[in-house]
Image (cartoon, rainbow over all chains, first blue to last red; front, side, top):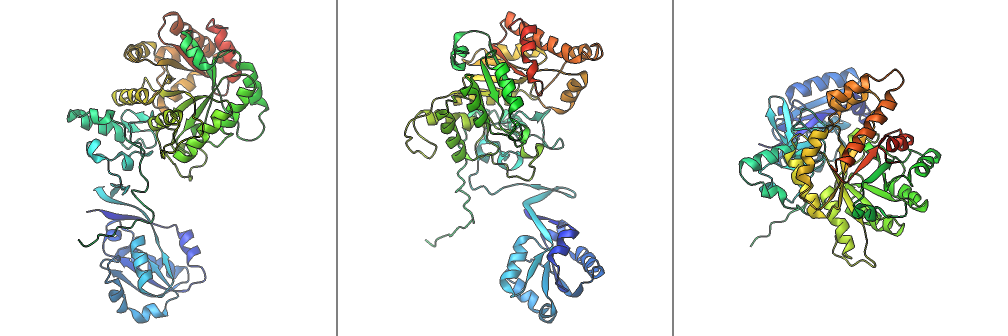
Length: 217
Length: 295
């Protein structure tokens, strides 16, 4: 399952964002941020302690089952009084959760996390970006390996000169996406796919902000 | 040089290019000195484009200066800092300044340089940039719009004969040729046997290959490149030769080695020319040419 991959902001930035705000209600999430250990129960308890040490008054906290869900407003209503007492909602979810809460409640929100990418856990404790959602999928010509996502430069017409024994010059622990693609296409006797020109990407394939309306037919 | 770079390439002579690195700042005195020193001794002078992702004077402005001084600039253009709109605009702008040789590069990644938080663009890649050059020559831009006056370029690219694995690199080399590359300047080569193998393959294509010659200044530099620069391999005998240089004479030894390599490449007709990169030692290029018997 793809997940929203997050990282906690630095203590310095958190304190700057909470400057002048004393009473804090904390919101975590039981889904992606629990998996990445950035906004589950243990992280929320640690954060309560950390903020209390810095002189904040914690009015309460809750780990929502799925913060980006439409039912988030209902789930939070059970904590109405604690939320009403708070100066700020300090939200330990991904940016989707932060925005969902902000839409439901007329309350200042401060994110505790930075949302890094949409990815999955590929090994214990390791999370990798799988799809950039570029809106112009070329996986059919790259043996199912995405260079737009997994090449640092997002190159679509073959490797740069920085391939280092099959690894990437930017990250020696990372396989060169184009070496992987070459090996895969060679195994599948499909190297002609690599000889074809890929056109410049249509950046309106991924319009900003992304929006899709499925019309009822 | 009276001849244009393109004429030199087509003349069948052994072509020599060198490189000018624009400075970081507005004091261009030293760079002007290097241009004056080199412009009449080589067939083309590459001007690097924010080399190694370090912000410097633009390659277009320095290429223009070289042209004004009567030299033959080879404008290096990378895809790291500009989208296709800016690249196309800069290409035709270079053209009206008299700059009509271009080396199309993807560019180093942004984090190796000195503006690590900047956005890496890579809207195009080296292959697509070559195609874009040819498109502008057809009188159109990549939006399909008519140009008022088409562009005209001698366009080239780079190839890394020591890349590992080499096969994907060669597929891209062939793609660059199909996209319109007329010449290639290679990443630094030191192992002539391996380079000969590459040339045996490359000779089947109608493109000119200029071997990359990077001046060695110490055995430590050679070891450092082997360990840290993908696509560069300095064989042990050359490292030993550098290490064996008399104290204080390592640079002279490096010049001797570069000159010897160039002479071999020319005398044995291995490739069509050389591209000399004497990074930070541009003033030594005439000595390298002399050591190669080309002065």
